[in-house]
Length: 330
Image (cartoon, rainbow, N blue to C red; front, side, top):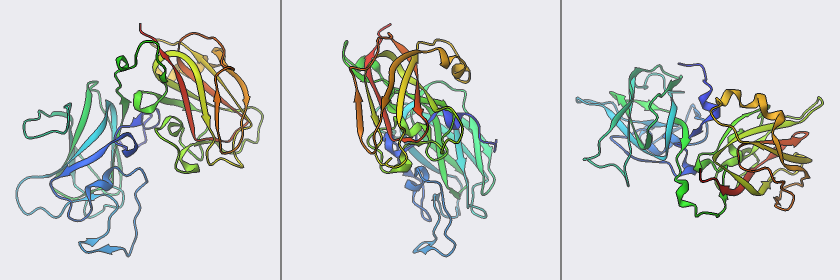
């Protein structure tokens, strides 16, 4: 599949370094180092750039294989369930592998020679300078992937879309945790606009590194306001909200509000249809530029929720959102 599917937006990339993912080994990376395979930036091509090994390429590239076998690369993931993958060969034209496959494992620590691998994606054909999307139906939890290429060549990027796994039993009874955190299974399901910054950035770990590392909408020229819907990593009662407008100085929202609902067995694609009727959790609050806003006393009693809708008025950008609360135990 070359058309960009829905799973690229509503699931997170489990192979992104900010979640602890790392390329830990490769059979060969003579022409381009294995670490570039999961760089968060889009791949680039620089016409006249060369290094000591030859043409500089923005990805992972092995040398031409002169013996039997194939090359492979092992990636430590943010542990989770995989729903789809993207194998990107952009800018690799005469040096891409004609075929690839993926194996997965679940292990403590990193895999060794005794590790049992399961086939996640059978051998499939690749094209040069193209983005290949493949859905995954296996709903087991994985910690590592092995990307096999046949026989050799270069891959610009590997994206692994899914849901992070977190053991919520680690949170003591009555304790508070960030229920929406990306690393704990939180997901941004949909929004009305993300022209300048992806909605998933809102629940990413750590502080934003710049204005592009947040969620930012275009300038609104019509009535209304912009919005975003999150699915929490675990249902719970929200007790404290943190809204960070770091780096947004002339383009922060004037106000924001939050609504929530407890939804069960509703497909992700149908969630937004009921969002206008959710309970108010945080009435509209004034926001300022480039600062952290903490709301606690303003939060309304609404019980446990599994989804929230963040409204910003009328438009603009927010770098991070944290929703602290007690997870439900049922």
